[in-house]
Image: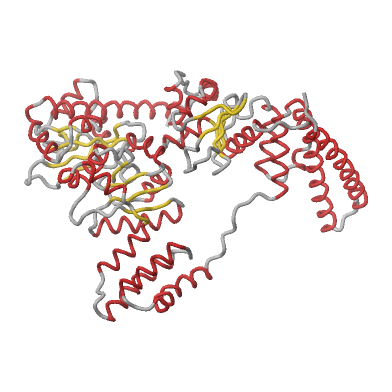
Length: 590
């Protein structure tokens, strides 16, 4: 991954038009000299609570507390890592990025990777030409058309066809200056077992589906056989320098912006399933790359959107993938839903048989995974005998064990009662036992809330930004270590000492950038009286003295009398500033 200079990052930040960037995701309207508001693109709301401060290039949502700068916004809405977000913004706003000084070996590796990506892209373009322009691709074109897939969407996914000859890619790439070692590293050729020392094209007589990263760079291929005599049916690029099985999802580069906008991502199994979904207008759809679902892929799904819809086959592999996703989703904290597919069908089959409206209805009719699991167990079990109903209840216990008390739990319990024709009391008793035990064994998870001291520290910094002249004087004279108990807020105060006029500038720490964005947007909404800043300063000083008194008492040290006198003096000063603040805010100010 390239490393760019700090100056490049700042030039990108300066070039970004924050209203233009955010406005591409949600409609904004001016709400002040340096503020715009709109509906939050990160959570569902009817009343605008999302605020943008153009001069500071930051945003903050008063509803869900999403906050950050242009880089955070691009990362969240486009599903990118930081470097990808910088490249995305640089391309959008016409900034040329400069690479930082690299270790010679790192520079060589970066150049090598660039060569391999170029080779893979050229190979992909060649396969595309064979599919659409070569007679040998006619059968593949007929197959894809018979599946209901249109040329425009196939071209968008860069679907191609690898011809039957064993050396087309090999010879063509050699003529273009690529070495045998590069061809092997890119995975487009492989060594012959029968003829040691020789190599041949890895993909032959197969439809090719490019496997891309989130930027659209081709990393490898999935290739489908065209004849029954070709085994296996699918051949994928092997793990190597460029392609790593289980790290990526098919179609992410085309789906990520749609997923961010819809706050939802759909996961299918096959390549043609994903293409069929996109053709039907479900553009927030990605697919597995011929592998079992991995933890890396589940994490990537959670980064793409807060809601994940599984549209996987109802066979054993699909069910196992759903259960694995459910386990990992509990750690990732995103919503998991299931679109129940017709028996023996996938989204591509539905498109071919029933058309795009049916695909949209299928994927749009998803249900929470817990409901899907309960309904699947009820429908597949033996409800005709007491023994069968007992087995169903046994299968349901672990499902209800993970389900907290609430409307969903009560509704599903009623479904169990109705389906099994047994008493509500019996069902509640049998299904509640394990849940109660699990809740008892698991320690309570406290809600994350700001302590009063940290709220004061943040309020003080907001006022420093809103009143930069006096705020700058105070920050310059303060002992930050003694006044700020929160390490993150202390770091923000230290940063603001030098960047009060541009709080978001030159920030490399992600958590710090988010906090500074929140403080900047909140400050922009204030019209404070100068005395209000002094009130918060006194509050900080009082908190410092209180900590010192507590420490002195605990250690049995002296100096308590002096600290107590300082506390009383601060209280009196605080009362004076409070009175002045009330007077200033009660009367109109010029």
